[in-house]
Length: 365
Image 1 (tube, rainbow, N blue to C red):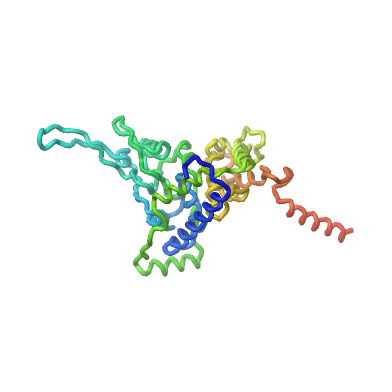
Image 2: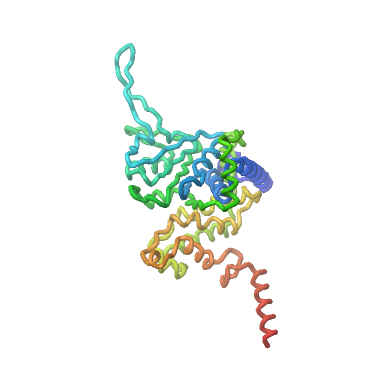
């Protein structure tokens, strides 16, 4: 199937069944090494299917690096890890030119040595520890899928996906990521501490001192075919409108912005947020065996897509209002397609509440 061809209904259903099956295999194989993190694994899979980038935030020891290297192994992708430090130079990421003398003539010519960014899945570890000049080199790779050295542009391999990590503590010596770079990340994924049972299982698993060998679930070429086919699936116009309305409502100057946005947000999400909601919802639907994305797909992904795209005000910090709280208000305020503008609850749920209310009123009378 070509990248621009719109699949038929039967092709879409077959694609959903295939992607769902592969997703289940990936989850099962990942669970052999990673305990818990089900939502994180799903969002990483969505990132991979959409050829996007993701930022993972969590304290050390939550298996961020292990998760990403495991995904690369299961998808038969070339994996590269870059440890970001304050002295990291752009050439340490992209590569550099060096002189090579000719053994016969003695003439010297430049040859390019590829850097670690020339991989399919790049782990940018502690990304906020590198200076802005290095971040700019990575941002070109993330957006343009190419690097520039001595005026020569070199394309990166397909797929090229950056999965970056950062530590929410120990912020000394770090450089806050600019909004232009944050906007390139499909998700900002929060990793929480495991539960007691999960941590006990982790302790037992790691006590063995060795990892189980894993076999690739799909080849890189097959993965590219699936990603191309997924990108051609049509999204319902009502869902597109919903994604755009949610994005616009995150801006304090918008007519449909809720009170919390007007009070606590200085700058709302840009147009990339709506694009991210649509593409990620489509991938989530396919992973769950559905050929058509729905409202539930968009709503499930709003916090991870908007939390790093909104700039909160000092009033939000003073009142301890988080981006997640604002995102929840957006979901409550913006009406869903096909639902009443007075409430985001489904019609059947409103009828239940109405029946309960009138029953209580009759008993009181």
